[in-house]
Length: 271
Image (tube, rainbow, N blue to C red; front, side, top):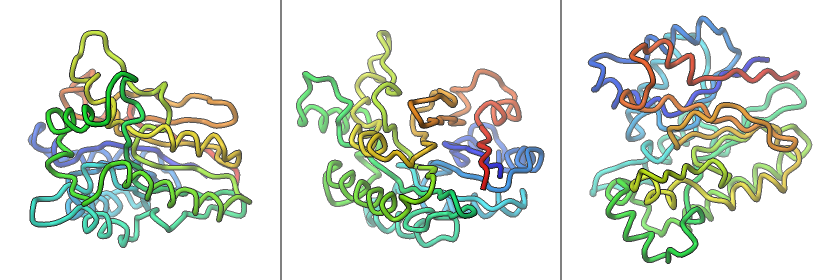
Protein backbone atom coordinates (compact mmCIF):
# COMPACT_ATOMS: atom_id res chain seq x y z
CA UNK A 1 0.00 0.00 0.00
CA UNK A 2 1.21 3.48 -0.89
CA UNK A 3 0.49 6.48 1.35
CA UNK A 4 1.24 10.01 0.14
CA UNK A 5 2.34 12.50 2.83
CA UNK A 6 1.68 16.25 2.61
CA UNK A 7 1.48 19.08 5.13
CA UNK A 8 1.19 22.85 5.47
CA UNK A 9 -0.47 23.46 2.12
CA UNK A 10 -1.88 26.80 3.38
CA UNK A 11 -4.26 26.81 0.43
CA UNK A 12 -5.90 30.12 1.32
CA UNK A 13 -2.68 32.05 1.86
CA UNK A 14 -1.00 30.61 -1.22
CA UNK A 15 -4.10 31.26 -3.33
CA UNK A 16 -3.94 34.90 -2.30
CA UNK A 17 -0.24 35.20 -3.11
CA UNK A 18 -0.37 33.29 -6.41
CA UNK A 19 -3.69 34.66 -7.61
CA UNK A 20 -5.00 31.13 -8.21
CA UNK A 21 -5.88 28.01 -6.26
CA UNK A 22 -3.18 25.41 -5.70
CA UNK A 23 -5.75 22.61 -5.33
CA UNK A 24 -5.97 21.63 -9.04
CA UNK A 25 -2.20 21.14 -9.23
CA UNK A 26 -2.05 19.26 -5.94
CA UNK A 27 -4.87 17.03 -7.21
CA UNK A 28 -3.06 16.48 -10.51
CA UNK A 29 0.05 15.40 -8.63
CA UNK A 30 -1.97 12.98 -6.51
CA UNK A 31 -3.47 11.46 -9.66
CA UNK A 32 0.02 11.12 -11.11
CA UNK A 33 1.42 9.39 -8.01
CA UNK A 34 -1.75 7.29 -7.63
CA UNK A 35 -1.44 6.53 -3.90
CA UNK A 36 -3.98 4.41 -2.07
CA UNK A 37 -4.48 7.15 0.51
CA UNK A 38 -3.32 10.70 1.29
CA UNK A 39 -2.29 11.95 4.75
CA UNK A 40 -2.13 15.71 5.40
CA UNK A 41 -0.44 16.70 8.68
CA UNK A 42 -2.26 19.95 9.32
CA UNK A 43 -2.62 23.54 8.13
CA UNK A 44 -4.64 22.99 5.00
CA UNK A 45 -5.98 26.51 5.59
CA UNK A 46 -7.08 28.94 8.29
CA UNK A 47 -10.18 27.86 10.22
CA UNK A 48 -12.19 24.64 10.08
CA UNK A 49 -14.68 25.71 7.40
CA UNK A 50 -11.99 26.53 4.85
CA UNK A 51 -10.00 23.40 5.72
CA UNK A 52 -13.05 21.23 5.08
CA UNK A 53 -13.78 23.04 1.82
CA UNK A 54 -10.26 22.38 0.52
CA UNK A 55 -10.20 18.78 1.78
CA UNK A 56 -13.41 17.94 -0.03
CA UNK A 57 -12.32 19.70 -3.20
CA UNK A 58 -8.99 17.86 -3.18
CA UNK A 59 -10.68 14.50 -2.65
CA UNK A 60 -13.15 15.20 -5.45
CA UNK A 61 -10.53 16.31 -7.98
CA UNK A 62 -7.98 13.62 -7.14
CA UNK A 63 -10.33 10.71 -6.59
CA UNK A 64 -8.32 9.64 -3.52
CA UNK A 65 -9.50 9.67 0.10
CA UNK A 66 -7.62 11.88 2.52
CA UNK A 67 -6.92 11.73 6.26
CA UNK A 68 -6.35 14.98 8.13
CA UNK A 69 -5.36 16.31 11.54
CA UNK A 70 -5.62 20.02 12.41
CA UNK A 71 -2.70 22.38 12.62
CA UNK A 72 -2.67 25.62 14.58
CA UNK A 73 -4.01 27.60 11.61
CA UNK A 74 -6.85 25.07 11.27
CA UNK A 75 -8.35 26.10 14.62
CA UNK A 76 -7.90 29.87 14.30
CA UNK A 77 -11.04 31.79 15.12
CA UNK A 78 -12.26 35.29 15.89
CA UNK A 79 -12.99 36.77 19.30
CA UNK A 80 -16.62 35.61 19.22
CA UNK A 81 -15.83 31.89 19.09
CA UNK A 82 -13.42 29.44 20.63
CA UNK A 83 -10.92 27.14 18.97
CA UNK A 84 -12.39 23.96 20.44
CA UNK A 85 -15.42 24.56 18.20
CA UNK A 86 -13.13 24.69 15.17
CA UNK A 87 -11.38 21.56 16.42
CA UNK A 88 -14.71 19.73 16.86
CA UNK A 89 -15.83 20.66 13.34
CA UNK A 90 -12.70 19.03 11.98
CA UNK A 91 -12.99 16.09 14.37
CA UNK A 92 -16.50 15.37 13.07
CA UNK A 93 -15.49 15.47 9.40
CA UNK A 94 -15.06 12.15 7.60
CA UNK A 95 -11.37 12.90 6.93
CA UNK A 96 -10.46 13.25 10.62
CA UNK A 97 -7.99 10.96 12.36
CA UNK A 98 -8.93 12.38 15.78
CA UNK A 99 -10.21 9.39 17.75
CA UNK A 100 -10.77 7.69 14.41
CA UNK A 101 -7.67 5.65 13.50
CA UNK A 102 -7.29 4.49 9.92
CA UNK A 103 -6.83 0.71 10.05
CA UNK A 104 -4.88 -0.69 7.12
CA UNK A 105 -5.16 -4.44 6.74
CA UNK A 106 -4.39 -6.53 9.82
CA UNK A 107 -1.00 -5.05 10.67
CA UNK A 108 -1.09 -1.24 10.45
CA UNK A 109 -2.94 1.71 11.97
CA UNK A 110 -2.64 5.43 11.23
CA UNK A 111 -3.38 7.40 14.39
CA UNK A 112 -3.22 11.11 15.00
CA UNK A 113 -4.38 14.32 16.58
CA UNK A 114 -3.45 17.97 16.38
CA UNK A 115 -0.72 18.10 19.04
CA UNK A 116 0.35 21.44 20.50
CA UNK A 117 3.27 23.15 22.25
CA UNK A 118 4.30 23.57 25.87
CA UNK A 119 7.43 25.77 25.67
CA UNK A 120 9.71 22.76 26.18
CA UNK A 121 11.88 23.95 23.26
CA UNK A 122 12.59 27.34 24.81
CA UNK A 123 16.07 28.47 25.74
CA UNK A 124 16.97 27.12 29.17
CA UNK A 125 17.39 30.65 30.50
CA UNK A 126 13.86 31.71 29.48
CA UNK A 127 11.10 31.67 32.09
CA UNK A 128 7.56 30.63 31.29
CA UNK A 129 6.48 34.25 31.67
CA UNK A 130 9.03 35.30 29.04
CA UNK A 131 7.62 32.68 26.66
CA UNK A 132 4.10 34.00 27.15
CA UNK A 133 5.32 37.55 26.51
CA UNK A 134 7.14 36.50 23.35
CA UNK A 135 4.06 34.65 22.14
CA UNK A 136 2.04 37.86 22.39
CA UNK A 137 4.73 39.76 20.49
CA UNK A 138 5.76 37.26 17.80
CA UNK A 139 3.17 34.49 17.43
CA UNK A 140 -0.28 34.97 15.91
CA UNK A 141 -1.80 32.08 17.87
CA UNK A 142 -1.95 34.59 20.73
CA UNK A 143 -4.69 36.41 18.80
CA UNK A 144 -6.44 33.59 16.93
CA UNK A 145 -6.04 30.35 18.94
CA UNK A 146 -8.65 30.61 21.70
CA UNK A 147 -8.75 27.46 23.84
CA UNK A 148 -9.61 29.02 27.19
CA UNK A 149 -6.68 27.24 28.84
CA UNK A 150 -2.94 27.57 28.83
CA UNK A 151 -0.75 25.91 26.22
CA UNK A 152 0.53 23.25 28.60
CA UNK A 153 -3.05 22.16 29.32
CA UNK A 154 -3.82 21.88 25.60
CA UNK A 155 -0.69 19.75 25.21
CA UNK A 156 -1.81 17.58 28.15
CA UNK A 157 -5.10 16.95 26.38
CA UNK A 158 -3.31 15.98 23.19
CA UNK A 159 -0.96 13.64 25.06
CA UNK A 160 -3.92 11.86 26.62
CA UNK A 161 -5.41 11.37 23.15
CA UNK A 162 -2.12 9.96 21.88
CA UNK A 163 -1.67 7.63 24.87
CA UNK A 164 -5.19 6.26 24.49
CA UNK A 165 -4.79 5.59 20.77
CA UNK A 166 -1.31 4.11 21.08
CA UNK A 167 -2.49 1.75 23.82
CA UNK A 168 -5.55 0.70 21.82
CA UNK A 169 -3.37 -0.28 18.86
CA UNK A 170 -0.29 -1.71 20.54
CA UNK A 171 -0.79 -4.92 18.51
CA UNK A 172 -0.30 -3.03 15.21
CA UNK A 173 2.48 -1.12 13.54
CA UNK A 174 1.59 2.55 13.93
CA UNK A 175 1.95 5.52 11.62
CA UNK A 176 1.72 8.51 13.96
CA UNK A 177 0.55 11.92 12.71
CA UNK A 178 0.54 15.24 14.53
CA UNK A 179 1.18 18.78 13.34
CA UNK A 180 3.89 19.89 15.76
CA UNK A 181 7.58 19.03 16.17
CA UNK A 182 8.04 16.03 18.48
CA UNK A 183 11.86 16.05 18.63
CA UNK A 184 14.16 18.87 19.69
CA UNK A 185 16.69 18.21 16.92
CA UNK A 186 14.09 19.36 14.36
CA UNK A 187 13.62 22.77 15.98
CA UNK A 188 15.43 25.38 13.86
CA UNK A 189 18.09 27.50 15.51
CA UNK A 190 19.36 30.46 13.53
CA UNK A 191 22.36 32.59 14.51
CA UNK A 192 21.10 35.35 12.21
CA UNK A 193 17.30 35.26 12.57
CA UNK A 194 16.04 36.70 15.85
CA UNK A 195 12.40 35.89 15.14
CA UNK A 196 13.10 32.18 14.54
CA UNK A 197 14.77 31.91 17.90
CA UNK A 198 11.96 33.79 19.62
CA UNK A 199 9.30 31.37 18.32
CA UNK A 200 11.07 28.16 19.28
CA UNK A 201 8.79 27.66 22.34
CA UNK A 202 5.80 27.38 19.99
CA UNK A 203 7.20 24.67 17.72
CA UNK A 204 6.01 21.61 19.63
CA UNK A 205 6.57 19.48 22.70
CA UNK A 206 9.40 17.18 23.69
CA UNK A 207 6.85 15.25 25.76
CA UNK A 208 5.24 14.02 22.55
CA UNK A 209 8.63 12.79 21.35
CA UNK A 210 9.25 11.08 24.70
CA UNK A 211 5.94 9.24 24.36
CA UNK A 212 6.84 8.10 20.85
CA UNK A 213 10.25 6.89 22.01
CA UNK A 214 8.46 4.80 24.64
CA UNK A 215 6.20 3.22 21.98
CA UNK A 216 8.15 0.60 20.01
CA UNK A 217 5.18 -0.15 17.74
CA UNK A 218 5.41 3.37 16.22
CA UNK A 219 7.16 2.85 12.88
CA UNK A 220 6.55 6.18 11.17
CA UNK A 221 6.20 9.69 12.63
CA UNK A 222 4.73 12.45 10.44
CA UNK A 223 4.64 16.14 11.34
CA UNK A 224 4.73 19.62 9.79
CA UNK A 225 4.37 23.10 11.33
CA UNK A 226 7.99 24.11 10.77
CA UNK A 227 8.32 25.16 7.14
CA UNK A 228 11.69 23.46 6.73
CA UNK A 229 11.69 20.37 4.54
CA UNK A 230 13.70 17.99 6.65
CA UNK A 231 12.55 15.11 4.48
CA UNK A 232 12.42 11.51 5.69
CA UNK A 233 15.09 10.32 8.10
CA UNK A 234 15.73 7.23 10.14
CA UNK A 235 15.54 7.61 13.92
CA UNK A 236 16.28 4.30 15.63
CA UNK A 237 13.54 1.91 14.55
CA UNK A 238 11.34 4.75 13.29
CA UNK A 239 11.13 6.80 10.14
CA UNK A 240 10.49 10.50 10.78
CA UNK A 241 8.86 12.51 7.97
CA UNK A 242 8.64 16.31 7.61
CA UNK A 243 7.51 17.49 4.15
CA UNK A 244 5.76 20.89 4.40
CA UNK A 245 4.80 22.90 1.32
CA UNK A 246 4.83 26.20 3.22
CA UNK A 247 4.25 29.67 1.82
CA UNK A 248 5.06 30.89 -1.68
CA UNK A 249 7.75 33.27 -0.43
CA UNK A 250 9.56 30.34 1.25
CA UNK A 251 9.84 28.24 -1.91
CA UNK A 252 13.10 27.72 -3.75
CA UNK A 253 11.49 27.99 -7.18
CA UNK A 254 8.51 29.68 -8.83
CA UNK A 255 7.29 26.32 -10.16
CA UNK A 256 4.26 25.23 -8.12
CA UNK A 257 4.23 21.70 -9.55
CA UNK A 258 7.89 21.22 -8.64
CA UNK A 259 7.35 22.58 -5.13
CA UNK A 260 4.45 20.18 -4.57
CA UNK A 261 6.61 17.31 -5.78
CA UNK A 262 9.49 18.35 -3.51
CA UNK A 263 7.16 18.74 -0.52
CA UNK A 264 5.73 15.23 -0.57
CA UNK A 265 6.75 11.68 0.18
CA UNK A 266 5.33 8.21 -0.37
CA UNK A 267 5.39 5.61 2.40
CA UNK A 268 5.06 2.04 1.20
CA UNK A 269 3.82 -0.57 3.66
CA UNK A 270 2.94 -4.25 3.43
CA UNK A 271 -0.58 -4.76 4.73
